[in-house]
Length: 112
Length: 153
Image 1 (cartoon, rainbow over the protein chains, first blue to last red):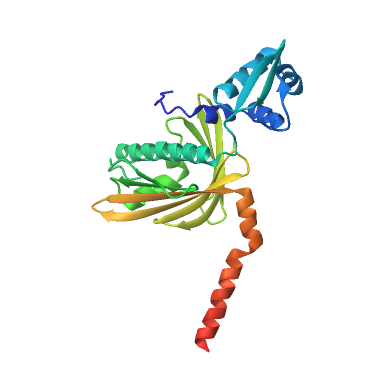
Image 2: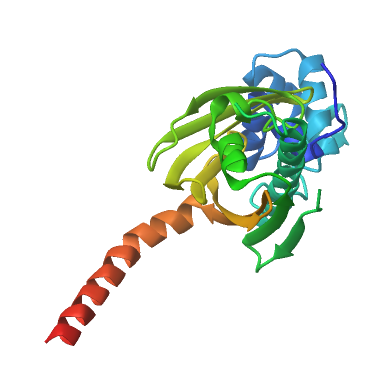
């Protein structure tokens, strides 16, 4: 399939996965180690590390290594930051309208 | 194709304007017919239109299959007035409990051109519940009815 380079913002990508949304919900109730998260979601440590890395990159989670344990907590970017969501939705709306414009141009003069 | 004009109106509102080189009926069809929506709404990604009941109270649900993941969007139509006005709620699976109210007005500019004004107002469930609790709409209608009676007396 052809890609048009309409990459979504990291946060949107990070949140598209139900496990990652579950992780944020869990961290909202208190910090947890990667191992605890892996146990809770019935995943391997490697699998959980990947999810945490994606969330960390999006600024939704921060991690800190304490001894041999990697501790996770909610990051600086909060889900309830409305300004952030407004920006996301605006970008999304604009991208859609670009597509609509292209679609209308492409189908011009072609009545259904 | 003219570039859209974006105005931020306060923290919770966004207005996007765009002129399309297509008659209003075609723009309306592209925005409301499932077969046509599937061809542009997904921003180049595969789009599955799971439901699209274009009438007031009707439900819509579109699922976009992007390389970063699967994005489900849904809401309900609030106002449907072909071919000029569409009001719907817009929610994303990733952000449950938050909704955008999206108002789209189509203006016929003549010469086969159409202006689309899209207005998005951010609503949290708390706001919405609060508004319903306060009975704002009913209250206003009652006031107007009372005013009518007063003026008729």
